[in-house]
Image 1: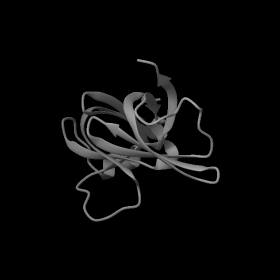
Image 2: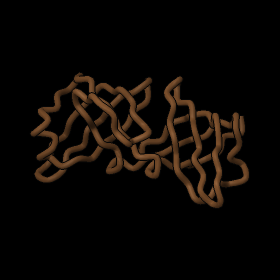
Image 3: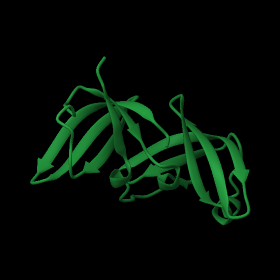
Image 4: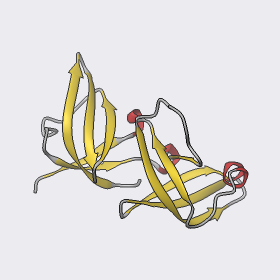
Length: 133
């Protein structure tokens, strides 16, 4: 998991579907959820998480895409295995890990210190903890 802290800015709810909007260091993020803890309220700080296998990487991204969450990041390290690659990224002083296929890592010619985009679907973001600070 790649945990990080954000603040809840807005909650949209229709029936049992919730779209929660966050501020992560002035970057807007969105999460889709069917159930929300009663402590999830506007203005609260939360610890968010995303699985490394749910973080996609884009290089030279242009145009519109449907993914709600896009962050600019710098590649800190790359470990290419036979099948999978672990890419360590830094965005806003926060470390994220992306697990992608080694074929994709090589095809994209990813390099240390290169700037890329991190892409996360709203359904892949989750609240680990509501912080009481």
